[in-house]
Structure formats: C-alpha cells, structure tokens
Image 1 (cartoon, protein in one colour):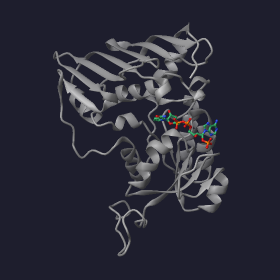
Image 2 (cartoon, rainbow, N blue to C red):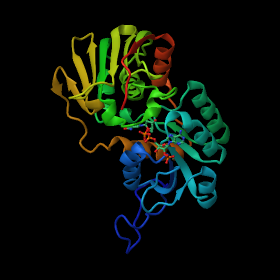
Image 3 (cartoon, rainbow, N blue to C red):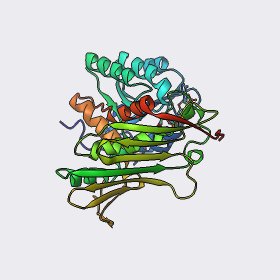
Image 4 (tube, helix red, strand yellow):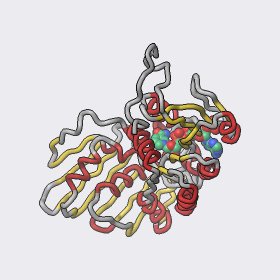
Length: 327
Ligand code: NAP
C-alpha cells in the first residue's frame, strides 16, 4: 500500500517543517556522538520515519521532546513504534529488552550487544512478540560493498588482507567505555571491517589465531592481528596517526585483485576504480530505509557473524601487554 511510499505534503506545508503523513514515529536512545553525527540527520531526511522523542540522561536534540527514562517517554508518546538504540553495547541490552516488552520494534547500533547470548535473547523476545529486531551494520551500507559482493560472487577467493588502522583519540575522544569490559577496544571499529568481510566473501572463514595488544592500564585491546582460514588475515590498530587506513584487499583464483578502500566507500579491481551507483544513499539513511522495510514486512534481521569472529578472537587470542594508554 501507500504506507511506505513517498509521503505527500499537505498543501501549504513548508519544506522541512510540516510532518509528511504516515511516517512512523521513532525514539532515539543514547544521545551521544553517533546519534548526533548520523542518526538525527538520517531521520530528518527519511521519508518513512520521523524522530518523535529522545531518551538520554543528559543528551538532547533541539526541538525534539527529551526524556531521561524509556517508561516516561512511552507514557508521553504512545505513537512511538520504533526505538533506535545508540547507547554503547553494555547498557544497550536493558533498553532493548524494555522496548520490546513495551511492544516496540527495535534497531540496534553495532556491535549489537555486549555478548552473543544477550542478542539471541533479544531475538527470541522479538520473535515471541511479533516485533522487528534489526541488528545494523552501517559499514555494509557503504557505497562499494554491494558491488564488491556481486564481483566476488562465483569467484574463488585465494586470500584476503584487512588493514583497519585509525586514531582512537580522533574517533572516540575521551570514550573510556571502549576500554572497559564489553567495549571491545579496537574491535569496535574492527567489527565494521568484519561486517564487510562476512557480507562479501562467497564462503565463510573462521578464526585460527590472534594476538591482542592490551594497554597495561586497560581491559580491551588497542591493536589486534587475526589469522583466519582460507588465507584471510586482519590487522586492527587504534594508534594510527597521520593517514587513516580502512582497506580490504581480496585475491581470487582468476588472478584478479579486488580492493575496498575508505571503509567500503571505494571499490577497485586490479588497481582501477569501479564506478559505483551515483544515487546510492548514505550509510545511515540506508539503515533507516531498511528498518522501515523490515517493520512493514514484519521481519527481523540479526546477523551475528561479525561478532562471532570478535568473540572467537577474545577466546583464542594471545594477550600481549603494551604501553599504557591515556586519552
Ligand atoms: P557515546 O557518545 O560515548 O555514547 C552514546 C550515549 O549513550 C552517551 O552520550 C550517553 O548519553 C549514553 N551512555 C553512555 N554510557 C552509558 C551508560 N553506561 N548507561 C546509559 N547510557 C549511557 O558513544 P557513541 O560513539 O555514540 O557510540 C555508541 C554506539 O554507536 C557504539 O556501539 C558504537 O560502536 C556505535 N558507533 C559509533 C560511531 C562513532 O563514530 N563514534 C560510529 C558508528 C557506530 P547520556 O549520558 O545522555 O545518557
């Protein structure tokens, strides 16, 4: 039906101020860096969804009703159908469970939880209640990823190398939670690379060994080197100053080399750029469009495969203590 078609504007509505009809109401929870950088702009450009309320202890969004608890938000905004959670992974589970119990569809930032089993518990709860649970992987929506997957389909992969090296002080300024248990350390960005890898490879791989470099004063790795089956390896490092590197290079049996650079935004084959679809959406608008589609269809999407690799690295990895880290 029309429910998720392009919204109509009422005569006399001014662009950006009037709410188009039929957009589902969304509450955004955990108003911090990613909520403000990406979720708020993506929602304001959405034709299917609109931001109706926020829940955060101190964060707010101008012009949007703000609450500090989910319960008071639900009481004031019964029309909210979708709850999008931008909290760090450890506090996210309780909020996700409460939203599902309150009969709302739930969208999870990556990584979808602090543990695999808690995400499976959310999956079971959503299924029981007939609600949508969407575990998002924003990097899978990067411009080159679908084309890379299509290019690799039917090819035999002989090896792959991931290099994901960025400056934690630049991308996570002062965010101590990333170095606390459940914060995942360098796997917080590294899982983005693994979300692309698991999306594009024609056959799955599994971890065989790992070295985790953990600062002497912290709980989670600041760097990791991973060896997978099938000649696939990955290096993650949060101490990179200067040019930032988010590359995945894949070799195939027909002698060709495919590279995804800039976190999946640029696709190259044998060193030459492959033109992507010009009209493709940004990563977060694409996530919200996908969420609207899942809710309309009554489906869930939860792929834990990127997080399985992280859990395996934490299980199997050899721990190496390195210099203390201070922001
Ligand atoms: P953040 O800014 O540190 O935290 C988001 C908000 O969550 C905070 O502003 C805080 O709001 C609330 N919060 C933090 N700790 C909490 C706790 N213990 N209990 C309850 N609420 C808490 O984090 P972020 O960078 O936005 O990242 C959030 C999630 O998005 C992570 O899973 C991350 O992997 C993902 N993500 C981040 C980025 C990025 O560039 N930073 C990119 C993509 C995805 P109040 O104090 O107002 O409650």
